[in-house]
Amino acid sequence: MTCRRGALIVLEGVDRAGKTTQCKKLVEALQQCGQRAEMLRFPDRTTEIGQLINSYLEKKSDLEDHTIHLLFSANRWEQVPLIKEKLEQGVHLIVDRYAFSGVAFTSAKPGFSLDWCKFPDVGLPKPDLVLFLQLSPTEAARRGQFGAERYENTDFQKAVQECFQQLMSDCSVNWKVIDACKSVEDLHKEIKSHSEAVMDTAVCQPIGEL
Ligand code: DGP
Ligand code: NA
Ligand code: NA
Image 1 (cartoon, helix red, strand yellow):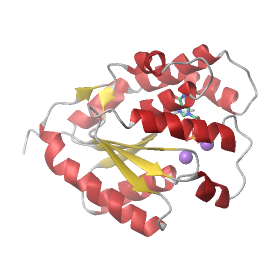
Image 2 (tube, rainbow, N blue to C red; image 1 turned 90 degrees about the vertical axis):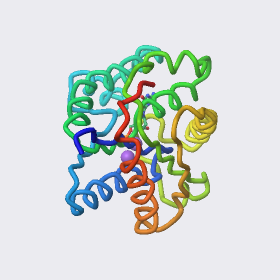
Image 3 (cartoon, rainbow, N blue to C red; image 1 turned 60 degrees about the vertical axis):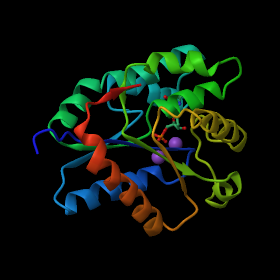
Image 4 (cartoon, rainbow, N blue to C red; image 1 turned 180 degrees about the horizontal axis):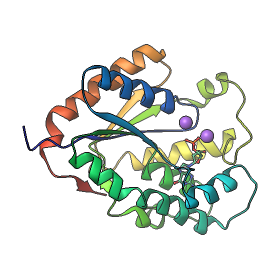
């Protein structure tokens, strides 16, 4: 069918929910079924903007909170031509974090409204599906120590989780909440079946905008 574009599927969640592992497994599984699928991740630390973000996350530099928010958004915008090109070629894109992390992580800081945080990402390609890997703070703690990067502490992650909850009340986004406590394989099966469902339907419609 000539109308078929690729699906844009995003995995979101607090740190250590297993997003990266699941993105990789989904891409592999789709490829094994003969589909064209590729993984993207945000922040993309390889670009010039990504290197500024990386240095901020590793606490090698300090940036003002609005400034870093806009850099994270710019880091998504700089990939938009590639995202559109791939989708139009029929490649499914599986994305490790997107604008929702952008909004949740900044609005968890004091003095930032959800609306202000959302604005820079308005107009980005809209995902056909956003899978939210839900992880309780207790289960997160069981997964061991946080690393040394900025944001990797329990109190901040709780605030981020609350911001994600607010974002999930937006019905214009196709959210699916998944219990990330499950085994890697069970989680994978659930994610794959939700993904296949949107690949069968959403991809005959034009790419939307956030
Ligand atoms: P990761 O490479 O997936 O471990 O993500 C790096 C960290 O950056 C993680 O703590 C989440 C946070 N993060 C991801 N995207 C954004 C964003 O757009 N804005 C802000 N403020 N933080 C983000
Ligand atoms: Na991290
Ligand atoms: Na990750």
